[in-house]
Length: 175
Image 1 (cartoon, rainbow, N blue to C red):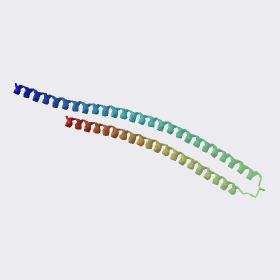
Image 2 (image 1 turned 60 degrees about the horizontal axis):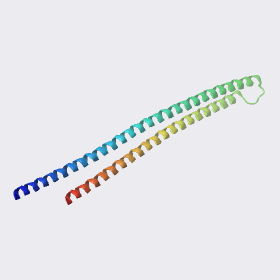
Image 3 (image 1 turned 45 degrees about the vertical axis):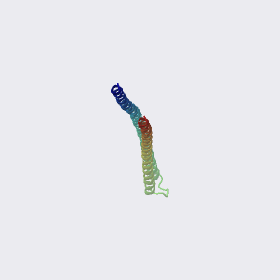
Image 4 (image 1 turned 180 degrees about the vertical axis):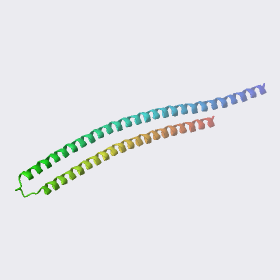
């Protein structure tokens, strides 16, 4: 009878150990499931953020292209106006020889204006390029910020999981 009681207690002790092991395994699986769920959500947010960034960049690219087309059209219109002014000036010089300003001076003025116009157009294009680069850089920095926040959240979950595992281990040791 004592042997049977001893065997029963040993079997009960073994069952408690197995139950404890199964509980630990279930706890680990639960933490893994939570982590995987979190990672899936993070991945989905990352995919959505990338898609949103791509849409923003495409939209901004279209805006910049439209602005560049406007600048080019304005430049061409100004070049046409300058050309007309040059023609008018040449006509006036030919008709009015009494004017003290020579044709060369008019041409130099037109050339100077044309050079200033070209420089202004180039400066506008450079500024637009810089604006686009800054928008892209800002969007990249936002993405990096989101990624770092996601990593912090993962670390918090892992820390909480480790603390829970440690507490379970301590509880198991106390038993």
